[in-house]
Length: 287
Image 1 (tube, rainbow, N blue to C red):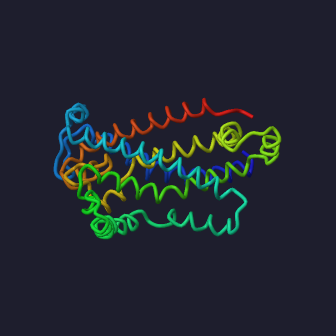
Image 2: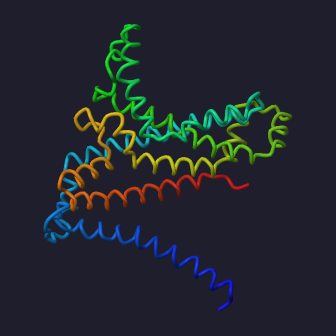
Image 3: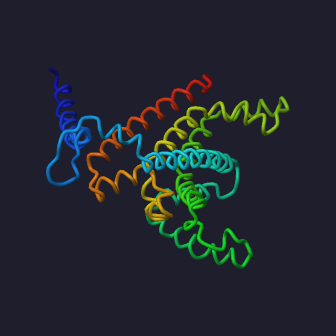
C-alpha cells in the first residue's frame, strides 16, 4: 500500500464512521421502531406492518400529503418562473448590477423561522389594515386565519425566501452562454422571445433541472415556515407531512406510527426526485 493510499484511508474511514453513527444507525433504528407500537416511552410490542397499513386509512395523514404536494408544486413553479426572470434581468447590462445581485440574495441568508414570524405580523396586522382602508373584504382579516387562504401566505413567504438561491443558479447558467450566439441571432433577425426559446432556455436546461429538483425536494420537507406562520392551522388545514410526523411522534405518543410515516415519506420523496430528475434530463439539449 502506497503512502498516499494510507493517507486516503486515514481521512475517509473516520468520515465513514461518523456518517454511519450519526445517520445510518438512527435511520435503521427508526425503521425498526416503525414495526412496533412504541409511544416514545415505556415498553413496546412488535406489530409488523400494522402501522404501515393504518397510514392509508388515516384521514389526517392523507390530508397532510395533499396539502404538502399542493404547496410544494405551486411554490416550485412560482420560484422557478420568478427566479429565471430575475436572473435574466440581473444578467443584462444594467447599472449597479453587482449591488442588485447582493440585494436579491439577502432573503436567502435570513432564517426562515424569523422571516415567518415577521410575515405573520404583516399578514395578521398590516395587510388587514390595508384591506379595511381599501374596502377589500377578503383582505380585511388575516389570511392566515382563513383555512382557504392560509396556504397562499405560506407559499408567498416560502417563495420570497427561496427565490434568491435559484436566481444564483440561473445566473451561473446564463453566464455560460456565449455572447456570439445572441449576436448571430440578432443578425438573423430573431426577436427576444425567439432567442429565449431557441438559445437561452435550452442552454440552461441543466440548471433548470437542478433548480426544479432541489426546490421541490426542499418544499416537500416544509416545516419551519409553517410553524411560524400558521402552526398548521386553522384547524389542520396547513399541516405538512413533516409537521404531522413531529407532532405525532414527539408530542402525541405515536413514535412508532410516525416512524412508519417517515419511512413511507422518505420513499415518496426519493421516488418523486428520481422521476423528476430523469424526466427533465431527457428534455435537456446536448450541445
